[in-house]
Image (tube, rainbow, N blue to C red):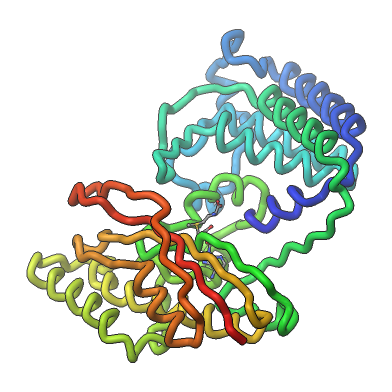
Length: 355
Ligand SMILES: C[S@@+](CC[C@H](N)C(=O)[O-])C[C@H]1O[C@@H](n2cnc3c(N)ncnc32)[C@H](O)[C@@H]1O
């Protein structure tokens, strides 16, 4: 999903007017299809009777199982799938991706029941929601951007889809001058949940096997993302501070008699996380030009039984052991930990690769 969004965001080729016109035609078509079934896209005029309920388009059970429960109500789902159908049937190559991305945004922020606070969850369950108008409004915003930024149209950009721990074959040696990124933190957050609804509706993930494959390419930053045979921790085996943190988490777990499968993995995730970051930083070295600058935004965490993890400092220590120069650890902002009310630092670790 992220890869797709990036691809579209750097594609300035569609002509704004053509895109808007094509989207309006599709909107009309979807409106007609819905009206034939007695469905108005604007909820206040809805006559949503029981027989209709049985004929609504929906996802197959495998896909449904992937969604956070109540992510989207049946009627908005039906309308969304009707719009996707129309987009596929009336596909015009040069507009298609923009139209799909505009739909993804409308789906998450307007059509669905999702709420970000900042973690993804379910907010108010809306029985109905307009689908066509928020989608058209996003298309309209896109056309404005395309017009406003047209002068930069020919700035080249390439988007790669890959695992940052295995980028060796994606990028050229000695080709990178700067890296700026917000990698995962060891915070028990499952990043695949954030984009789950649109990933499933747009057909990027069809079942549990595909989800698992996708998760395997992500950093191990939460216990739902740990797999048999994971061994990124070998990369930090020589870091006593990370071993100490893992031991402290495990001792606390035993002391608190926490015995679930997830809790048993807490200490392991902490080690796998820093091991994965070490692996990324080690591999990256061959791709960097001498003098390259790097910025990593990371936050302190106390998600694992309140054991404090100073992510930025540890990342700086790992980087230093790999030959990077530490230019600074800048305070970006502080956040209050939900459990302990302590102030946690969010920092930018700035590195330089001397070559
Ligand atoms: C803290 S979030 C940053 C989100 C981003 N700044 C944004 O605004 O969308 C960390 C991101 O890293 C991604 N990620 C996790 N493991 C990765 C890996 N091995 N390679 C590349 N990206 C990864 C996650 O999916 C997540 O989107």
